[in-house]
Image (cartoon, rainbow, N blue to C red):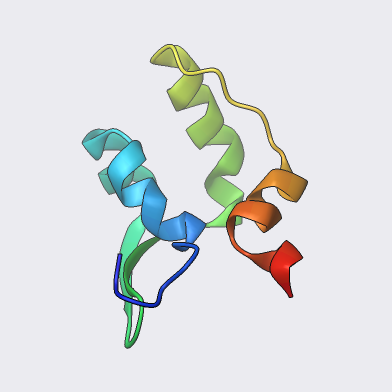
Length: 76
């Protein structure tokens, strides 16, 4: 985390949490001037990514409210 970048961007956490083969298959590493690298995953790839994660034993659900909280949206 870059100093002053709180909370860390949810999309930057994906770089640490997703298996490397899924990063390469579904995402594109992007970078910002101030907040460092993050993972961009096209919305069109969501369903296929969820299937791939479940096949690897991950339990995944969509929770927009939680993501907005983790991304700092509720602190504004």
